[in-house]
Length: 98
Image (tube, rainbow, N blue to C red):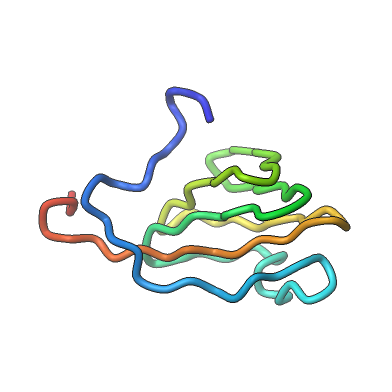
């Protein structure tokens, strides 16, 4: 991540997460352009995943890396054949609300 990369707001708390996916079982909705209504993070467990959004931002994340996903911004992912990952969703507390 670069210094100007988005970050999950301080005070946001983990709410739910998807199961772990790989290139063979990734839901089609994740590889098509879509929008979330809350902050989230792409968490890469193995291999790599390309994250693309409309800001425009393109991030190739490797195992052990996390990519913040901003609410309201169209995005999609492109998992490599060896990828394993999940999506962590957050709730925003009053202290973290803009």
